[in-house]
Length: 619
Image 1 (cartoon, rainbow, N blue to C red):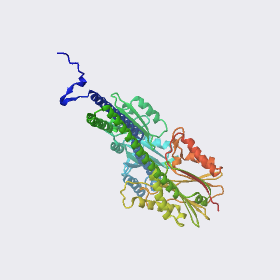
Image 2 (image 1 turned 90 degrees about the horizontal axis):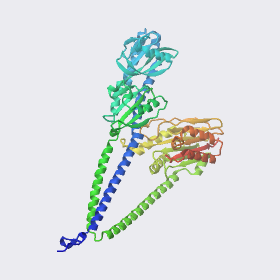
Image 3 (image 1 turned 45 degrees about the horizontal axis):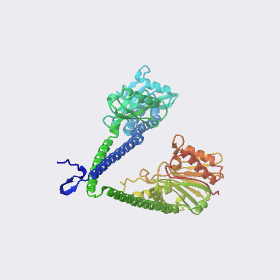
Image 4 (image 1 turned 180 degrees about the vertical axis):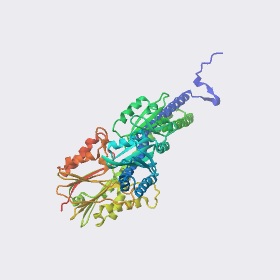
C-alpha cells in the first residue's frame, strides 16, 4: 500500500469539513498579540500610576504632614510665649516681687494668676522665680526651691538672666517636677536688672502622645531632635535620649546635619534603601519657635501601601480583558470564511469607527469651545466699558489676563453724585466656575451698592460677605462648599478725598518720593471662617497731585518663575511700580506685561491676573 502523501492541512475531519490551520495560526498570533498588548498597557499604566503616587506623596502629602505637625507644635509654643510675656507685665506679680514677696494679699493674687493661666490654657505648669530672693514658686502656690548658682539643676535660671533676652524657650528636665518640659521663660522688668523670671511649661510627654495620633504606620517613626541630632521627643519612648544616628544612615545624616546648621525653614524630603532593600522616606523641617527640628521616617510600603492593591487589580483586569478578548476573537474567527478578507473588513470598520469617533469628539470639543467663548462674551459684557472707566479716572491702565478663556477675576465701577466706587475682585476658581462666581458677585453688587454704601467700603465688604454666604449656602450650613473671593474697594469722593477697604487685596499709592501701602484685611469674602459680624477696616486719605494708585489680584504676585522658580512676590511688584511710575499709563501697562513675561520664561500662567493703575480725578 502506498504511503499517504496528503498535506496534513488538507486532512478531512468529521462532517466532511477541513480544519483551516491558517485560521488557527492567525488566531494564535492575534491572541499572543492581544496578551502582550494588554500586559504592556497594564504594566505601563501601573508604572505611571505608581510614579504619580510617589511623586504626590513626596511633593505634597508628606510635606503636609510635617507642616501640620510643626505648625501645631509652633502654635502651642507661640501661644505659651504670649502668655509668659503677659505674666511678665502683670503689675500685681511685679509689685509682689519688688516687695520681696512679703505682701500676703498680692502673693495670693500672684499665685492665683499663674494657677489660672495653667487651667485656662491647658499648660502643664507655670512659675515665678524671683531674682531678688531666688524663690521658685509653682502654679500650686508652693515654694519648691531656692535657686542656687552652685546647683546644676538651677543653671538654666542664671544662664537666662545672663543672656539678657526678654524671652526664650528651653527644653529641660526639671528635677523638682520629675519631668521634661518645654519651658517658655520671660524676664520681668529691665533686662539689664530683671526682677524675676516667669513663664509656663509644656510637658514633652503630651507632645509625644500627640505624635502617636500622626503615626503613619507600624514601622514609621517621628522625632524632635536638637542641633546635635539628639532625640528629645518620640512617639516611641525608648528612642528618647538617643541619637538620630542610631536610626538613620550616615549619608542621610550628612544632609540632615547640614540642614540643622542653616537658617533654612522649608521642608525637605529624602529617600533611601536599607540593607534589606526597603525604601524609606525621610522628611525633616525646623520648628520656628525653637531650635528643634521635626524628623519623620516612613517606610514607602506603609505610606503608599495601596500601590500593591493597584498592582493586583491591574493584573486581574489584564487577565479578564485577555480572556474576554481571546474568546470573542476566537468565536468571530471561527465564523469567518476567509480570515484575511475578514481582517481587512474589520480593519476598515475599525478605521470608520475611529473616524466617526474622532469627528464626534471634534464636534463636541468645538461646541465646548463655542460655549466657553460665549461665556467670555457674557462675562466681558458685565465688566465696565472703557468709557465707564474713563469717567471715574483721570487716566488708567488695565491688565486683565484670565488663565483660561474666562476666569475668576473681575472689576466693577459705579458712579453717583457724591463720588465713584471701584472694586477689584478675585473669585475662587478658574475658567467657567470662576466666571460663574464673578457673575454671582456682580449681581449681588448691583443689589447692595448704592450712594450711601459706597462711602463706607468696609461696611460694603461686610454686606457682600453676608449676601454671598446666603447665596452660596442658603440654609444648608453643612455644605462642603467653601468658596468666596478677595476684594478691594476704593471710594473716590468728589469733595472729601478717598476711602479704601480690602479683603486680602491691598492698595499701593506711589508718589514722587514715597510708596504707601494700605493692606487689606486677612479675611476673605464669603468663606465660612469669615464671620457675618466681621468688620473690615477703612483707610481714609487725601489724594496728592502726583499720586498713582495700584491694585492687583494675587495671580500676578503668585506667578512662579525666575532662576529659582519662586513666586514673583510683593517686593518685585513694588520695584516694578517704582520703575514704571514716571511713564505714561500705556507704557506702564506694557512694562508690567514685559516684566511678567520675562519672569515667567517658559512657565505657564498659574492663575487669573489683573493689575490696574490709575489716577483719580483731582479735586
